[in-house]
Length: 312
Image 1: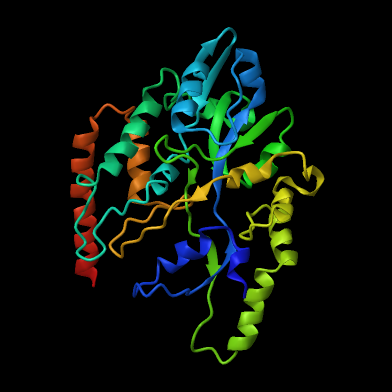
Image 2: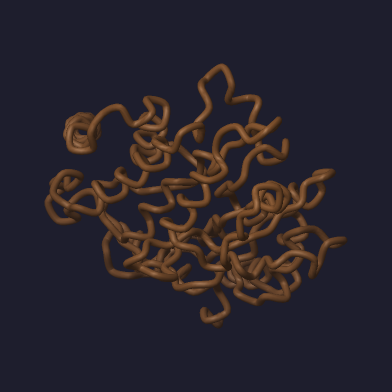
């Protein structure tokens, strides 16, 4: 199979997770996980703010969020929705533990303080994070959120939300890492090595990665894992092909993948300590300083690793 057909960085992200660290490809990608920035054009127009560029930086996005958040006349807005933020940690290519020893690096690797300082900035924007009692009143589909970080396939939902006028940009990059995108693990299919039907199973994998099937996946609302821009166009729906700049979500270079068998891994679609602690900081509105926060996070993760070791 031609592995160059897949999104740049996808194969490397899978190889990194070989449990024996031999760089083997133990599964073939089927669907991708891509997160990007969506913005409400009407809010930007109303407030006289220039739209985000195709490849914005975090500094630019937070500056715009500060201008949008809060009350403006008869409207009240969230500047940047507090979700999808943990992807920023993936851009930094930081492993939370030493892959050889399991030593926890949250306090020792400055990239973790850098990330949680970013979260502090998001929650410190006045009016940007609604109180618990208010949060259900705000939503990108409701038209009162300026920007949101979401799966690229959210384009289909937003494209078919009446009255929602939106644009798309790449996921914001760090100023010192311009154009570096999160490198997620695609959803994969693997062949059981004990199978008596290896060749037939491989044909299934070939079909899964074929243009025909990848196009069907996109139409169905899941990100294709091949990098053909003509297939990606279908992510907004068959009736919206060419309407939105879908390919901008892929504009940049995938971050170098890192992996430690001791974790933590960072996923957009399931619980992990990075996203859990991000949610905690958001809920507490960043009241705790980052160094104290990381120290407590280290103690918490040490207990998790100890429990895992005891189960073995």
